[in-house]
Image: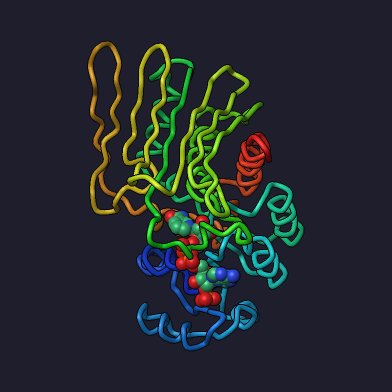
Length: 324
Ligand SMILES: NC(=O)c1ccc[n+]([C@@H]2O[C@H](COP(=O)([O-])OP(=O)(O)OC[C@H]3O[C@@H](n4cnc5c(N)ncnc54)[C@H](OP(=O)(O)O)[C@@H]3O)[C@@H](O)[C@H]2O)c1
């Protein structure tokens, strides 16, 4: 393998266009070699716009390309498992968008398919790579808040006006919990280092999917997690961790701008420390970790089994919905 990973992009998804492809193009150990779409003209236009050398009119052609080392999979959630498994069968390392699959059982089948073939798989939860997330995790480990009593996490935005978006379609495994609530669940599991032992949710269901959802997770240590997520409110992406010794507030938490510093607010002993974190492109850091793992034959920083566990918690929240 050369010193740079050659990436193939599975579809002309918006998130690829605006965040992940530019991040791969900036990454020190990666190049974007090809893109595939269900429509050749769309693939060609996209390739021209983003400076990608090769365009394919089917996903199968991309997977058959021997000059591709890794695939970035930003398909609708319902398609993650089937197409990622095809990537595994083609021997292509795969960075798959969050949430990893439609449910935990599907996610486990995916993880097994990659493990059996010794092919790399990772879930694209990019916020974990931001230095501010790492810093908060270190603060928790050092006892900054004491034992975690409660975590509150929120991720909302307003989708109004985009009523044909994949997120609003049940058949594509849409829903607010799937799309943005998954971050809230993830950060609670990351910060507590535990898996929830119970889950309850309430939701407002729109035409097809949960459009606003609040939920509570309980953790074995006694910590409680309260999350809210949704498609019908102004953008919020934040979390707060409380214990008897302190309180940490992170805002923005999951999608900080790559060109701006972020501030962690640490309340303790009647003062508030503002911890300034320099700007970072969390997408680029994620891509570089994945490519490094592939080049050096090591696991990715966050193991794929974590994605299955995240889906277990999501499944439990959905299963608890009244009338589910
Ligand atoms: N990590 C992040 O920051 C982040 C942010 C946003 C979204 N995401 C995740 O990324 C994925 C894509 O989100 P997005 O907003 O970028 O989606 P999108 O713009 O709607 O793109 C999805 C792409 O999938 C392809 N596709 C295949 N089957 C499809 C079908 N039945 N219906 C619609 N499209 C289909 C289409 O590409 P072709 O027509 O070219 O085949 C389409 O462009 C989701 O899993 C989402 O959760 C992650």
